[in-house]
Amino acid sequence: MAESDGKSTVLNGGSEEKEPGEDHHEEEADASGSKEEQTQSSSQDAPKETGETSGDKPMPDAETEANRDGEEDDNEEEEEEDTDSMDGSGLYSLTEDGERESEGGRRERAKDKDGGKRAARKRNRPGGGTNHSTSSDEDDDEDEEEEQKDDDEDDDEAMEAWLGAELCDLRGPEWRAVPSLRSREIGRDSHQFVRRVCGARGLVQRLELQGRLEKHTGCVNTLHFNPSGTRLASGSDDLRVVIWDWAVRHAELEFDSGHKSNVFQAKFLPHSGDSTLAMCARDGQIRVAELSATQRCKNTKRVAQHKGAAHKLALEPDSPCSFLSAGEDAVVFGIDLRLDRPANKLVVVKEGDKKVGLYTIFVNPAKTQHFAVGGRDQYVRIYDQRKINENDNNGVLKKFCPSHLVSSESKTNITCLVYSHDGTELLASYNDEDIYLFDSNHSDGADYRRRYKGHRNNATVKGVNFYGPCSEFVVSGSDCGHIYLWDKYSARIVQFMEGDRGGVVNCLEPHPHLPGMATSGLDHDIKLWAPTAESPTGLKGLKEVMKKNKRERDEDSVRHGDQYDTQLLWFLMRHMRNRRPPRARREGGEADTDESWSSPDSSDEEEGGPDHVQCMSS
Image 1 (cartoon, rainbow, N blue to C red):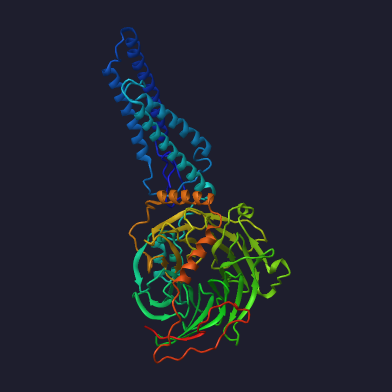
Image 2: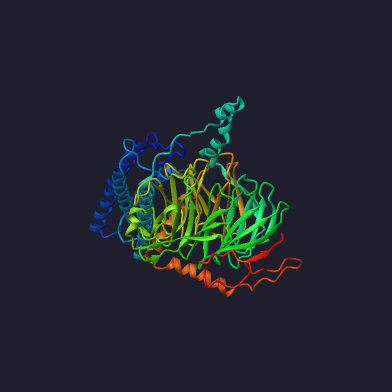
């Protein structure tokens, strides 16, 4: 984003210098302004004296000429500002020491300049500042318009200061296409070629929509690539799961999940030959689908039951039969499919004596015994499965929170968190707040390292993710329907794309080996993105969208209260009213059985329904 005083920003270099001759133009503008004041004051005084002696009105010719000169000077000044404007094509800027004047000095100069312009406009009105030729109503309208313009400029300056408060300079490009291609041709570092390409900023800035996958009849809540990246699993509010051959945009398999409410996640278990899919949903059930090599679903089984909605699952990177689940009942289950009763309650998350409902969970890929959770408070909590003692700090190994949110009165929630590729960093997205990056190796209570701003997270339980083989970028959806990608190190926005027309992008799934990703949200389709644009993004429209997001967030922070819980309750009640009746047995299929893999700690209030469902592809 450009500064309100018209300074441009370089997209990739991180350096921001004044345009040549800018100071010279400003001096000329100041000189022109002073000249204009002298000319107008003399032209106004002369007619006024004549009018007092003769009783006639001021001479219209001299007055008109002075007004015309003033308007021309004013138009020249505005045209000069427009020439330096960004036109929505740059990154939001950051003041650099030694290169540009201080933020405070720039604001003072802008205020003085605005004050002079307002005075000039007032003098240039018909009648030379008198009430002879204009009505008081017209003057009031003009004053209101000028005040509105001033308020808009003040808002721009405030947002610019907010956005630029914690930014760093963009680093130079680490991957260059021509040298890299030449090295690959002669066999030098060829095994690193794809990894470096996927993490190149130049390709991220060329991401564009490639196509859509259409099969679901409800919002698409979850996306997950298999380990090889050849298949994509999706789950939806329509209670169905689809397995895609995304490269040819074909649905290989579609089956009934067995859930009674919105499917929130569906994930391939690693090293299972894509034959096992774990699922969770709003009904609190954790189910496992067994898939055959002939593109059909054998059955789905319930393996655990939460007392509230279960939003997320966490896979252990090297295990084909064990994973974790977290629910709004504050319970974390460890699930091992090799056991007769797979679910084992690991911990009930609490803050003091109060349970904390959970929205997200993730396993550290480098230390698989560690997992992190987040939910209905501001703390990221890390646990060690080997030594959870609820009598000792409620079993928490360590917890993180942005320092300004520790004692905040606003009710913040963590909607999603994720570890980096090597487990050293932890990313957390807060509702009605920003995205924060923590060092997972820091001690208990450490503050965040980076903060990513500009998006809006309010309407749904929104996801966040790293992008790139070495977690070089941060990607998130937004309530405005756009997709944001930040450079992880500098926290600057490097890509901005229109996602869902329905207004909210929730799910973002980067491809495990290729430069591209899949996204979904309130629309009923899945969108595929790849770096095929001829030129890098210009970030067109980013400034206006971020202004709107910031304004809405500030307004909501005043009246927030328990709005987030109210929204979740509304969605739940809406589902309960429209709940479907129990499913009938399919023709030719096996009857529902009483077999249950549920934990003895499962809910006593769960609804009746099949634990074992025979399903067939459609």
